[in-house]
Image (cartoon, rainbow, N blue to C red; front, top):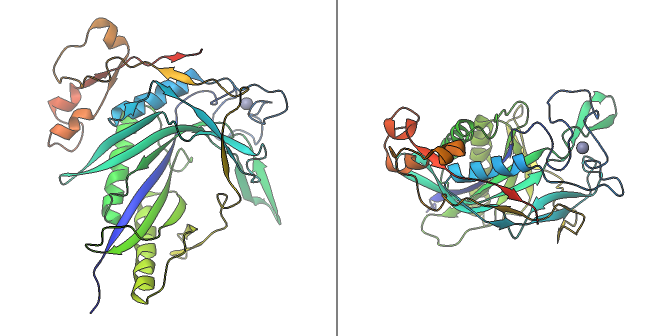
Length: 339
Ligand SMILES: [Zn+2]
């Protein structure tokens, strides 16, 4: 008798914030400039360089968190994620680990379904390896190193590839509306990692998952999930076990295969030392009181108000069309205090 399996998916979405300059220095974030021209001692981590946090990046990250209904912590802390990779020659990425910017939100994806959002944390991007520029060599472009990102981590509550697609479309719509990112997958400002596993329906615990990295379109996410899920089911059916590993999706060959992982190379997380940016505090006094649709915002709140889809949870429309959405403003004052 064959067992019925269900797909278990959690998504990690990296979104580039719409700032003019990088997260910890004043280099431009503009896309398509000549390689390695937008770099400086800070984003190259030369000795003695002192990173200074870009307040605008924090504001946009907090706005994204509020639009997705997360609780923004008054204090969050940066950490160094240590690993070496050619596109990260400084040897660590500034990220957040045990004290992220925001936690616990939800995203309605239609059909009465909502997916929990575990956390949103801030981090900087790495550089880019260019494999097709010089025959036999890989070139490194560090223009992207230090560009501000948020990582949006969902709960493993997605149950099909179609739900993964719906989640991503809803997420992109909100991020575009809140004007925190241009969400261009072609330019790499929205990238998706998908964690997938399969388990027999009714089994309470999760089985071993694999992670498909750097998916660059929503349809590729859906295709890759179907392929990898089918592999999991086949392995379980045959009595085998899944090895936890990082996978890559080849859209041309329509296959998912194992990849050498950055993460497996002895990654270590450390609290960022004193030379790193100080912890930032975010004050959002009004964020704790959910917005009342139709209530006129005060003049001061208006200045700092952010439109939000928060009330989407309470209405039945699929987008921006109803009064509740067009009239719903989210008032939050986000400031970055430096101790
Ligand atoms: Zn720089």
